[in-house]
Image 1 (cartoon, rainbow, N blue to C red):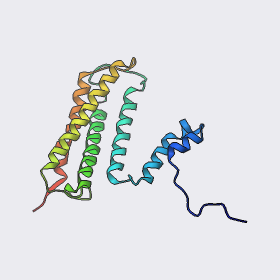
Image 2 (tube, rainbow, N blue to C red):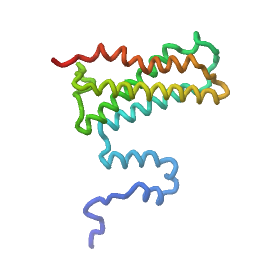
Image 3 (cartoon, helix red, strand yellow):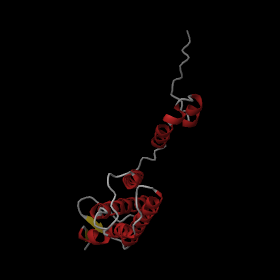
Length: 181
């Protein structure tokens, strides 16, 4: 008898798999997409940081639009600390991603976080500024979304706190950066 099995496993494109299995069209599409990314060797540190930033931004969106038991309009009960912390962390994650993306193309300035942060280029200020602006604008977008959600409220003070949290990275980060001699 002749062995009909191929000697090597052939690569099947995820789209072909989806066309063959109609039940998997909806449930497995995301899994197949990420599986394809891993097979394509896009699994890098920059991609990981991007995904963490994206997931954190989605978590902020989720917690910003879910109904709460009591919604009180006013600055006192708006979650001042949670807004500051959330947008500071988002700024920080985006800055790490932007720095890593820049480093992948040969313009890196060392390790962003690995014990002591080293500062070799002035471009770090631009990276942090971009991250803070992106994070702050995302906070404005969240407030605009909340305006259209019936059980949430639009507040200018929340937008201010979101931007403050996003730009808090300029206050905290200098304590972590050590200039090289």
